[in-house]
Image 1 (cartoon, rainbow, N blue to C red):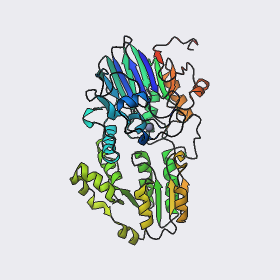
Image 2: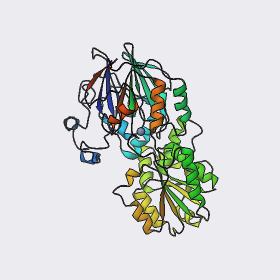
Image 3: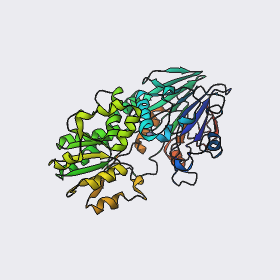
Image 4: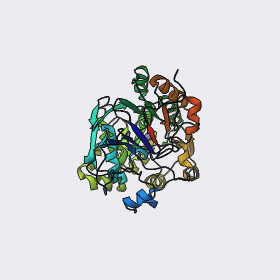
Length: 441
Ligand SMILES: [Zn+2]
């Protein structure tokens, strides 16, 4: 087995790995993400590139150089595997050849479809082949097995990839402190045997772990903030972060607050029914859906009948203002939110909670805008990524032949944490199994 990390050896975002048989005849690609940073580490902005042709994108180094992967090439890749529905893992899928199958979980497929409708991500949904957790599929000469992981994207998976008697474990993004921590613990107690190489994410290496250690702690802290006001609480979080949505919804129920979501979030929850009947829905207790023209138009373009699905839970601004109890808004900071804030009338005693990675606040004016309305914002967040102690637990349980850092800005730290670390550069080929100079104990 041979592998090349085309992007991700020294950065977070834009993940792309190519795995080959020894003769190079069989090839698959694992993740095909949109970069988050440019080579100089400044933020990557897709709008600067969206008008380029695939050839130009390849030349610019935006599309990873995988021959036979893209629509303008002769197809020569057996499949693409997508670990989860975050843009930095699948955001370049729109460019692949339509004959190449894409394997992902049913939850990822649902979210990719929602993003197509609302965020113009342009993935060919017909290409997506849903995987069943822990069930192996044969892809050319490869056997691929998805492992459900705990992450801020629901239905995220790690992949075990076997070919020619060698075994790769691709961790994808994961953590051990979310609502799916039981699957992480199960992986630790029932480790996949005989792993020759572990591609391990390291997002949290070199980052602060923050004040909240788990989703439960987030839920408790959010509940206390909601309780402290009889008015509005604005919670900023991603609608596709299902764990967080459940934490905030539970906090709203415990404080008898209305849980106000937009049409986009209502549609996300509706589509995620495919993974579990226990996912909160617009029709559930205390949930209200606030329509905006922008989201209504997007949904109507896709399928007008979907617009009426959430009618029973609809609330409008007049009803919201007349409501005398507590209301919790689960929103993102965007034009729709800003307009709503201006139209809400009295914001006296309102509170705000930022429940995303605080790095996103840099350079923005959210805090200033809220403060001009007299609203104080509190940071209540726990990462979607594994803390160092959980990375160590995974490595010691899987006991792989080698550990290759990726999805990290600090690959150099891995050698202080693990044995048999091989640090690659983007585009460098690794032959597996590896003859490590340090013998394994
Ligand atoms: Zn992710």
